[in-house]
Length: 450
Image 1 (cartoon, rainbow, N blue to C red):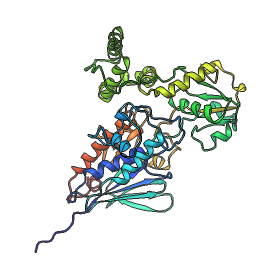
Image 2: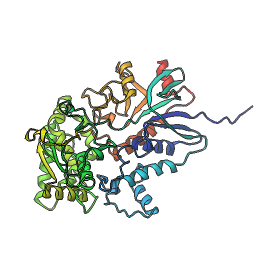
Image 3: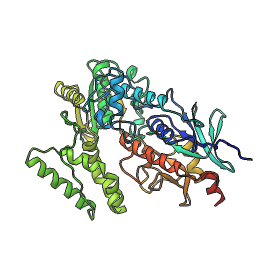
Image 4: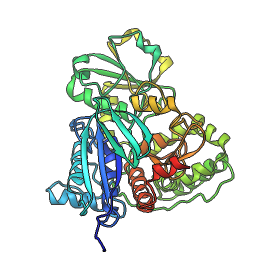
């Protein structure tokens, strides 16, 4: 006698419900079908799904650092964000720099509106994941409050850790603010304060813009080893006017020389160096993976900061505010050895996120590192994963049912945490899970039996 039994869904738990987790869930459900169903559960410890810390801010000067035309959350649909804005009466063109609060709403609504095919499911759970263990059914995802969920595949979408510890300033407490996104930062920086911001990247720009509006008369001194501010986006167009591919350079020196030569060629005419950087960004991970370990080490030590300032640029309006602050004396940029700590009322750490494998910032990372389920990449910036983002454990074996998105992939890849990166990673994840054999054991069960 024939029966029409519904196929059993593949159970996927996504740890982290920020931008990476939301974009992953959207792509997974878009790839699911009634005959290859998925049951997706997002576990998020913050107050909302989709926006995460980056897009939770409502400050009017906190805008996106890239064009709206480049920030669709859906792979293969570059106008998805622009259509969403148009449907809600939000003025946006391909060259707009939207407020981050608007983009956070876009991510939340994109997740809320994703079609869930028959036989599939999307669940949301609040809580802190403290461990993922193997069992005969696959995995058990355990939360701090005692909840647990069974999973056939687990996706680590952990987001960025808090800023790197700065022990040299910690003795200054309570004048020292370790996290620039602390809820009480405004109360800690009254009007007319002298503020030292450690770091001169985009986080410093956000903090300085916030002080300009919320703490009148406050003066900011921003310091770093390089003293470099982020570069500024060209406001006119998001389209590349020069497509540059360096091919397959034999070394980091050859790669840098080729990039500089192309920039000189463009600047000798009417071209723009940003086209070279943005073209290189599109193939950056291929170039990164072609470098020798020695050249990767040299890139991190000698080139990375200059690349970051050119790659992660300020929106034009934000740059205008920064220049105005510099002209008025409200913002000064210096090197750390040029300042006296005793001259500041508050010191704010804006040095960038702690590397993901660092103990102490996330109980799940601590548990998995201790057991050898995950291990640091050799550079110490992210976790060791294969080229599809699957965990490499302490023994060197690939764990086919443990997947990593975002900043935790830094090392195997270099460009990992921007929206285009998360979008591409999520599309690849959906392809991998769609190709998993059904009826022969889940990926975790197959791994365990091996």
